[in-house]
Length: 190
Image (cartoon, rainbow, N blue to C red):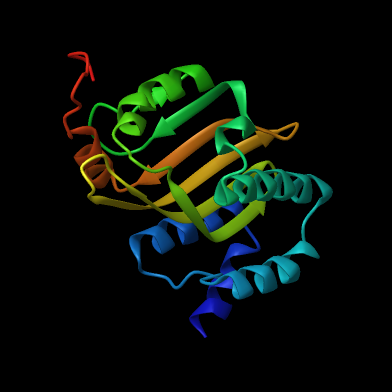
């Protein structure tokens, strides 16, 4: 019942989609697609109501995410070189990065502290005009053997198959817990 209510809410307006995604991230709504079968079913239902632009955007993001999920690609490839990436929240990495390179450079201390690649699992995907909203979970193993788990909502503003702007919501304390892990031969800034 709640899934039907959410499906009804997220179709008419991008603003409602954003609120639904934020509520989903906060755990107060059941996701439209909480399994691969339901994700495929909701994607089929929703595809008939998308404009050509929305469908192109969804296809580009879905393809990039699928390659990342399978370990055959890097989701960052969907970013335009001059993409602006904003991490919402507080702390030194909660800010706006003004290019793909700047964002990737800032994430190196985090990546260096992971023993395994991040494994993402898509939970929901929505589109409205040039905006695509992703909800996904991830897991990895840190260099000390501790598990890393996080949930994300990313809002991507698309143009010509590339994300021009990204706003990311995630559990920053879990992220910072990994960044705080010591490296054996690290520079003082890492």
